Length: 76
Image (cartoon, rainbow, N blue to C red):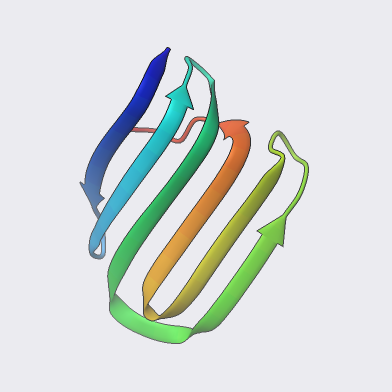
């Protein structure tokens, strides 16, 4: 189990992913910030359940933010 994990990935722009208390398959808290090369309209999605306690995705113009509590670990 790792206390803190960080990685950066590049797809349509840089994305920075932070994880707290990361296990083999699950993690306590994950969040990411990203900047995309393509602007889009504002978007908000809030999910509860489906192998996570809460999941929030926010997107506005080129900036995005994702947050997940007690969920499956994102790929690194």
